[in-house]
Every structure is written in structure tokens, then in C-alpha cells.
Image (cartoon, rainbow, N blue to C red; front, side, top):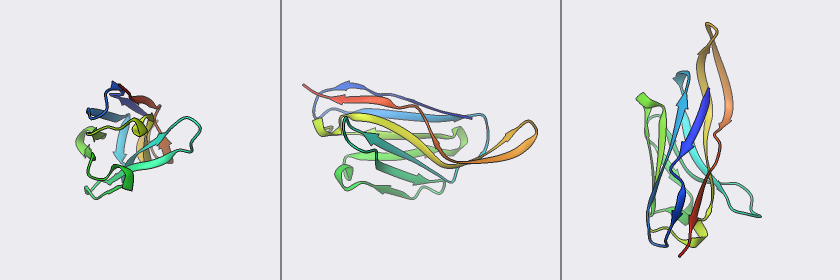
Length: 124
């Protein structure tokens, strides 16, 4: 099982980016997926979460600007980021709180699964 994030890049203040994170493998269930970010010298913090049923939460700093969504059929979570600010610059990581999947004919479950980060830089 892998979480593969993509979509980062360099954007000017006020611009937009859309991040994607796809879980690959014989996935059965992922109850909750999330995006976190970590700026240089800072701790990793939650940006947004979404349950399989579509319930969402956001960090106060991104409310009204970022939108998290997911496609359960594709085991993919997205983060639409609008009105980007320089302080949004960070490495963005996707997370799955728990992944249930088939491997070697057995049903397995792993918790707190992380994808590799994708760099987002907001600068003029």
C-alpha cells in the first residue's frame, strides 16, 4: 500500500493549486484521510480532514480558502487551495488514519499511514 501525493509547485500569492493523493493497493477501507503541512523549522500541523462519508474539518488558517474532497472509488483525496499566501509555503503530506487492505490473501490493517510530501511554495 502506498500513498502518492502530487500537485505541488511554485505559485504567486493569490494563486491556486490542487493537490492529489492516491492510495494504491488492494484497499478495502480508509475511514479518514487528511492533509498536513510542515514549514521549515515548524512542527507538522493538520490542514484538513475528511471522512469516508464526506464530513470535513479545517485548520482556522485555511478556512474559506482550502477545500478537501475525496473520491472513495479511487481512494484519492484532494486539496483545492485558493487565495494562497506566502505563509502557506510548506511541504504538504497526506495521511490515512487507518487502511484496511488485502495482502497475500489476508485482510490487514495499518494505522497512521503517511504519503511522501509535496512542496508548495507561494512567492512572487
